[in-house]
Image (cartoon, rainbow over all chains, first blue to last red):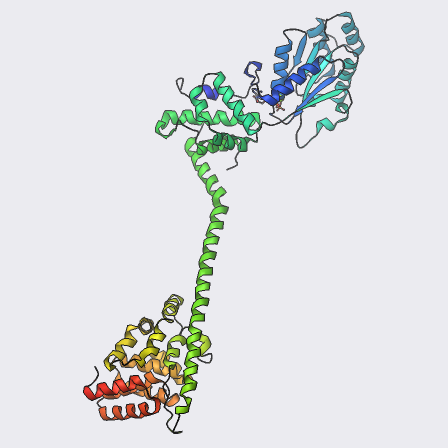
Length: 269
Length: 249
Ligand SMILES: Nc1ncnc2c1ncn2[C@@H]1O[C@H](COP(=O)(O)OP(=O)(O)OP(=O)(O)O)[C@@H](O)[C@H]1O
Ligand SMILES: [Mg+2]
């Protein structure tokens, strides 16, 4: 399996968020530039929202990666739901204030004014839909006091429109919506991912018709595309080991794409 | 972790399921096309038979003035065609119940029907009597009817004839018996047919030929002469000529 042509491509599509794997896609890059510019503006809080798997966490990680070279940035990718813990962790990570006890908002703001940063430190909160209304209110007060700047991500589902919730409705939010990829964007995403890791042979196998099928099955969702490509290359690795004659190295077989889609649950069969 | 064989099975099931509406649709389309072509064909062949019937009636009218003696009304007629076509288009003889043939064979008969009657109409051209019988036999129509008769009992038709006295059925039975060498029966049924409708040429011919077969050559000649005098039938004259030479086979 080590020498399989498909084992590396397979690993490329494991669903993890690593800023080094970030792929430049025109529309996303444009959004990312907007995001970076917004971060430098005073006062406003930034809201990144979109359906699951549209790349919000990826963009947040990328932002963290890029900003941390120049300024104080702290990222909470796993939400800290408890209000006391939240303030305590922030005080420790940003101001180096270590305390076992819970701290009040007033203490926190005093701390903030005591420590002087050349630029307002930035806090990145992933999965903000999990924070309580009370905690969101505190976050807003901290932001109003210009103590910290927040960028948060929210995921929007059909069942619940969190953006409609009251605490995200205030004018201080600058919101950016992320969307599923178009077929062209999906093609760029898959091709670039493969080429970045020198998987030229496999990249050459993917033609526009294949992309069309993949795009139709995943609706351009990055996470679904990852899952589909992962099981597709697993399938190819299996055939390479057991029935190499069945592999056509000129293009991906629609049948195998559909089989992978059945395996990942994108097709109910 | 990947169970490829089961995945392939599921994929096949999915494919069949997703193509099912298309398969069903194209199947229905094909059936529809077949049904409409058959229907159009039926309509056409029905329309083609009707002009012949009109012609035949016209000829009947022309021949009317030839009814001289009121006792023996002998008249040439093309109604034997009706016998043949009546098995196809029931509209010609609505009162008659027609032997039911398998639909597939009906289609064959219909296809041929428009061809054979004109051939019979043109018997004005002198045809040797020995050719008359083969002519009837060679037209695929009677033979196809014969093929049908093999599948059912002639007695059934005889019973039906007894009940409704349809001359076409009578002629049919007479022809059947003559072809099967039952000259007595052929004679009887031709006689019965003539008594119901004395204008059926073929019935007279069978009647005469059966008489010859039964050894009543003189009587056969006399009958034919009488018929010729009333009908001016060429076929009858040819048959009579052949009697003069020798006995028909
Ligand atoms: N620009 C990109 N470059 C490389 N990978 C990307 C990019 N955008 C998305 N992905 C990949 O798509 C997958 C899903 O993206 P991500 O986890 O950021 O979605 P999300 O919007 O945070 O979803 P959720 O709302 O469920 O948290 C990730 O594995 C990530 O690697
Ligand atoms: Mg996420």
